[in-house]
Length: 333
Length: 230
Image (cartoon, rainbow over all chains, first blue to last red; front, side, top):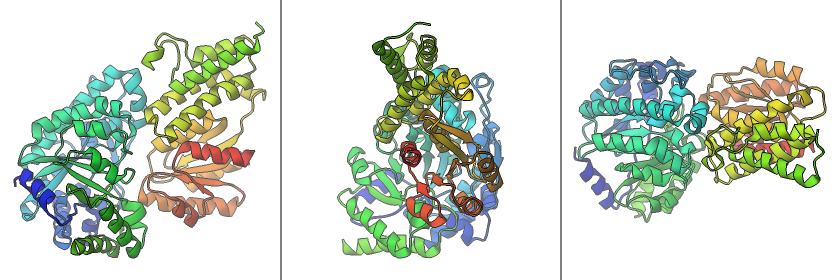
């Protein structure tokens, strides 16, 4: 698929479209547990496919699992039955970074995720499938400890630069492999960089992401840079990466960030997946979605999305309300 | 011991506050680059105590002032998480020199807060930020860590009568655990004031589960606690 054409068609269209970051409802639809879906590429792909058939999203997204890469490096992971896996403890300190091996793509659950993407790209042929990967700063924080890396960036910058280099080399390899699966792009999730100032985000995240993007992005494969931690302070650093699309969380003002982002890139966001989609009534959700669509109406490059991954146990009528609001908005224009 | 003039004393306390505000831990710390080679909160606190500044003044007019400033800047998006953590580190180094004064009672805290990330949840950055800012603003923090079950909160409340309780959660699934823990705390200790925070939470959720306060940033919590202890 030519992603440049896909992007320009969206921008040229009068109708609004949506690309929610949503897989858990699909996991629930196939009767699997989260634990099963994150460990089986086949179940994972089935979930995405079922979801894609049910809802008219403009692209399909895979599970946003920010433990896969850390597990490949050797982190210990806990797998709750019906919640996302999480990392237990840190793996390296400044002394052990030098000895840290960059893992192969056969480590941990990486092969299952590659399989899931390959199967999803084969099953879903009417829309692009976006794979997922963690960003280098978020991965480094998971390996080193999030609070610890924030301090070490200032006190031990050389050690952290080496760790970031190792993380980004692995992510680049992983993204290249994801590209070979037939996916049309990858959502690089870099939420931890949203805790940094613009200057620090540039130094500790964006320069590494730009290197990855320069290698993997072309007219058949796009990078969507997701940063749900950004409250508006590090948008310039995100734009520096040259991604073809940017995805924002609910901590940011979409009209404001749309003014900042290049008009030829897609800008996605930012319905609160918990506070709105999970916790509000369908009527309230319709109001929230309509309000966001109205606020962003003047920007042709806006794509409606959730601000982050839709959590487990969101009622079906709530998801329907999200889509109903979009349809009603499109009927009015 | 030298007797300082009021002006000199105020100068050194302001320098301590500046070091905490800017995250200047000690002389050898390279951060911030603009203060490279200068004395940090560590050396200045020691110097102030040696020169006769009251330990209570070092805490309230130096360290707490610096930490209060960084908390406000954080709320206003003028600084970000790493800068707050550097300030907390500078504060923590200086606090080590005050430990014996806390133990002998010559320096008193404003109150105690028991903090933990609730059972099933291993995220600690929000909890750590709140802990550091609360401690930096004069509260004794009993940090129970992450994945804290109700029994551990109850045990800590028994050991620290009158303490506030702060609970953190980042996962939607562990928000439910927060409700359970709050219920258990309130049924056994109805007088205990509970505060909750975490990215997926909001005020409505806090009200629904019966928590007393919700804040979306640490300085706001300190302001609530300050009003409660006033």
